[in-house]
Image 1 (cartoon, rainbow, N blue to C red):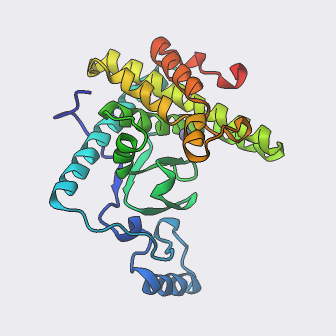
Image 2: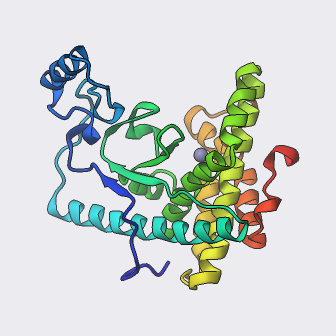
Image 3: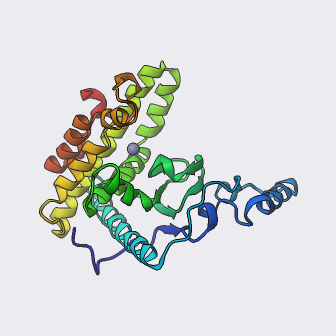
Length: 280
Ligand SMILES: [Zn+2]
């Protein structure tokens, strides 16, 4: 993807420099005491400032690693800016107004309105605060462990999380959350899969318009995204982890499904064709 010198989004909270992604502002026990005092004194608890125990912390980065990390940060900012341009246009074309999400860059662990999360769980979107959370080391993980290299593989991940934001704006997230509460575990997992596949579809729609509006995709970019979709399908991840595949435990969809929906979004660019709930 051609991204150097292009606009980067300013809807970014960079918490990489903070210990634990900004969870314990004062650090460890001091942070806990400050927090307890604060809430005892009647302060409103801000989840983003809530302390958790100082957990896993990586060794400080070398100058080289920091440079690579900063470059990745610049890249995802450009991708986020592109999602803003595309979704602002699609929403406007449909007579609606798009509310842009915020991207939080963090390292190791982070507190969101959805709770405390370690980077081991990968990038995620929290509908409660409309923010995307990404630890950029996931890039490395995709490349080394999931065999999904390439800048557009990461662009796909960002676009997928933005896809969840679209679902929140459309009210799909809330609707499915209500349905899932009444459902059995297997049934609830099925709904999770449909949500995930729709986010993949929206990522494809974004790629379609990004190319149409800006002509910035390189040959091979779509293959990088498809390869990533293939690599992070539940069946593939499960097999890697346990050696077996249990369809009921799928929450993101199979590799085949993920590639299918991303490609459908990319080929059609038509948001009305993303009814994963009807088709799966
Ligand atoms: Zn997802």
